[in-house]
Length: 286
Image 1 (cartoon, rainbow, N blue to C red):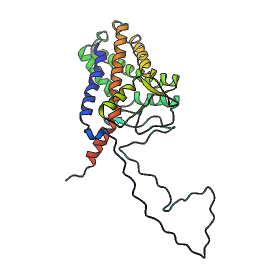
Image 2: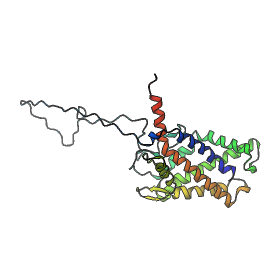
Image 3: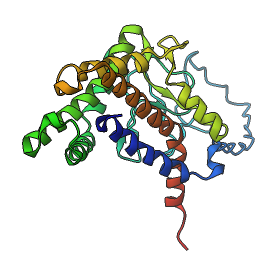
Image 4: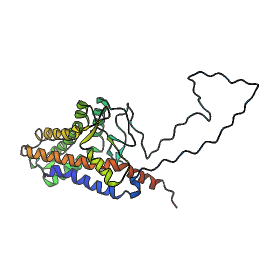
């Protein structure tokens, strides 16, 4: 496996190990919501001298004990996306873009093609991506991987541009281009319940199974086919001539799928980590 393929996989493997070790076993199960306190029975005083006022058939009370109230938003459980949303605002470890993960959402409106592209743009050009690719380019330069780029400032600039282009092309192909053409849903639906093995197995299965825009399961052509197309485009276009081989393309494709496997497992368990973090942060100090 080339150094170009190995760098992201090693970095995210370490992130996954640290993240999963930080979860207490009790946090794997979704916390039960407390039942609302029972309402006190209301008594109505009947006044014989007054007749009830007629109300319009579609009128609803604006205030009073019978009026419904909206619960306050829970910072530990972000609301699901709606039809007008183009992804959430969540971030893995409060930094990495995680705009396509849905928590506690069994049925949500499908995304339009424009929304799929909008999320791809947001995540590809997010401010966190620039230092991330800069670090990858620095590691690549130190290891002199893909020596056709050379050394010095010019070699570093080529490596940075290649890393940025690789990530951007893969993101668009997997989350926007193929899902828009085949009408599939690029979002990850968190399972959120069960043990570690069950949830990990479910997350890894999403590499091969996804939802259509109509809500049915189908093969994940976006992940498998989109990532292969991205590997072929990047390898045979701007990478050095020595890397333009079918074996290198297959190696890059396999490593990218492995990278996505780590990311998707993080997507499954990240809400548990976030809840644990907020719980510890909000505990009163002695």
